[in-house]
Length: 386
Length: 125
Image 1 (cartoon, rainbow over the protein chains, first blue to last red):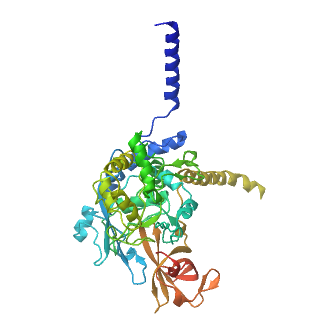
Image 2 (image 1 turned 120 degrees about the vertical axis):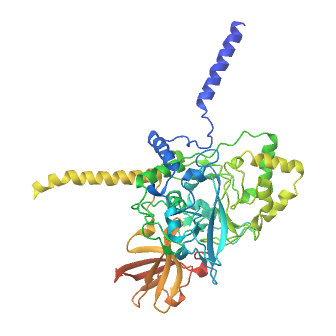
């Protein structure tokens, strides 16, 4: 090898080393976002074992619950992923159109499991659902990138909303609201305003583990919890443990997109051309945030975090501001890791899910069905890269 | 009594430090206290109006851990919307309200009710 070629090879290797060192590894499911301080990274690491902790009745589980740990539902690919466990929500629409979440009858979440002590006391295997209530099945979503979604300003949602379809594009989009009127974005019906509430509330709702902000066990279908079935003093986890789990979820990175080829790039263009991107908005931007790693960041979320009418075929329950047929646009971050689709998991493929879109999405669905096989494959290749 | 100030200063500073540390930790993770949990104030959605006894069932809570709070309305209760007086008979299920109340005889008595958004204009729908 000549001295010139040796020198060129050395330069190439040096340059490659700089490139590798300068480019952080794309995040895998379960990885934290880039740019955390050492303290934030430590909180993320401290939160993971609590997220993965399996509770039992002696450590706070129940008496009603859907799962014994966060990670037993949010399990696929990594802690924080989607999961196979579903739960039941119920509500009832009153004659004036108001949606009653059945708070006085144990609603809107009806836990599917009970501790042995509650089973012995009441002879039930799950929380009873009131007769006549509308019911909906909810699958476990992944929570990757939720910290970034939480950091998108409310003003962004209000700017995208077009409740009366004033622009005439057939897509409306309404902001969800909690019962106190605050703008909300988490949950399939966009009922939970903040990620902090989403994370802390799930302890009690999903595991029956009380927290400082949810310090009581609730009821069994509206009736008091029988004496003696839950002897552990409330709250069953501390504010510090809640904060650690909040940090773990908040700092989970959205999985990096796969490198895309020509067809996938064409598929991405088609995604916009046939109107999917009107609701599955490709990019949102976070605002000011006390965590630098979450502030002023672009997030490839493919959602507008708004409620849209999805048609009568998908309708199940009303909840909060959402009617029975309205659902918040599902983020598509990490879509390639999913194997059940739509709010209740009725679709076993992305293509089946698209074909079940109705309401405001009907025009886009029809356009998808009208694509040539080649274009349809390109679109699927794009979606499978997310 | 100047001499009494110094011994009190250390615990006061320690308490201030603890409060600041807790507040800082909450900010770092974005944890926000539930604004509807204040003892004499609540925001929520009217679920039911008891016209016989003059009371409201208001849905409030945290996440999906919801609860119904019963608030008694008296003739002296000021009900307003956008600063204007609002008739009790116009309240309906789905109205989003902010209630100031006091407790007496184990009952929550509304001092004022502000209609933030009426069901007729969207409310909790």
